[in-house]
Length: 71
Image 1 (tube, helix red, strand yellow):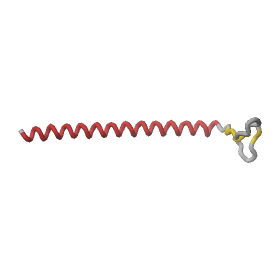
Image 2 (cartoon, one colour):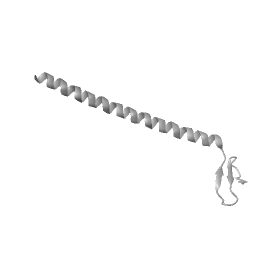
Image 3 (tube, rainbow, N blue to C red):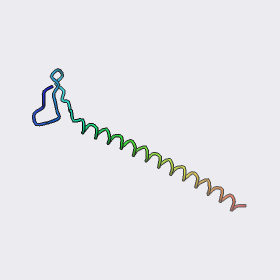
Image 4 (cartoon, helix red, strand yellow):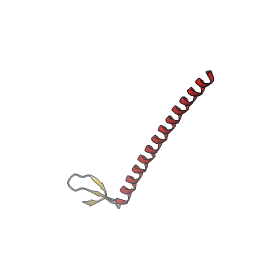
């Protein structure tokens, strides 16, 4: 591989001409950020589900309360 001038972590593959980033720290940071985003999305989905469940329970409670008031 040939070092790309001016970029300490970039190399050019001699056969394909592709530029390859060999900065493992940046790659690991990227993977961690993706993992954090997935965890946040999962947590948000769980919160949405909890809110929907609370809404359903409140509707059910109100229905029972109204039916009790009519008696």
